Amino acid sequence: MAKIISFATQKGGSGKSTLALVLAAPLATEYGLRIAVLDCDYQQSIVKTREQVDADNFEDLLKTVPDARYPYDVFALSLEQVFTFIDDPEKDYDLIIIDVPGRADGDDVFNVLTACDAVIVPLVSDYLDRASTAEFMGILEAIKKSADAHGIDFQYFGLSTKRVAGRREEKQMDDYIDNLGLSRFTAYLSHRVAYSRASTLYSLLNPAWLRYAGGNKETADEIRRLCEELIQRLGLPARKPATASLPTSSTSTAAN
Image (cartoon, rainbow, N blue to C red; front, side, top):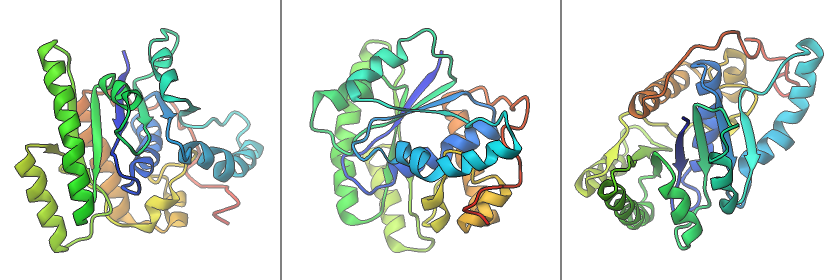
């Protein structure tokens, strides 16, 4: 049975869609997980990345690798369609990632969060983001108490995004989250341009795409640490892919 996670917050601009993009491709290509991403956000950032950014690169790739496939599936769904999708026995995935709208003011968001094994909350160290996170934590704590009472496994975690080394606000955010009693990931993502260039076709662990995106070894190391911590916390199988899903040298026009 698939594990279901969502990247969620009630404030836009925290990086939840970017997290989904950064993690989905390497989890599929480097760790062999069968993944579906459900893009339920109004902005449809993940769907647009595939349809508007990656489509030309994929067509070019097919010229040299005729049997190439995208490393994971992407679906544009409304929140109301999520339950039909996850209840479909024909859907054979290890991990379903849901990108929910950046709000928490309706039953539709609340209901989808209750369907998740884990909710991951992007943490940004600015004061207004911390205040918004505290409100959202109250919602997640209410879900957890209800889940615990019914013997249902539900977890939620904070995950630092746009982290800037040595910044005082980062320490304040860590202390703030610890005082709330929120479990947070040890791994984090720094404030790097490469993450804004994440693709649904190429993993940022693909050396050629990493170079094109402006990343380096530290970028790749951050992604690996985060993937491995996520796999451990959720108990995912972390199987290696039977065959390489994409060539290690990008043939994309964007990289040329």
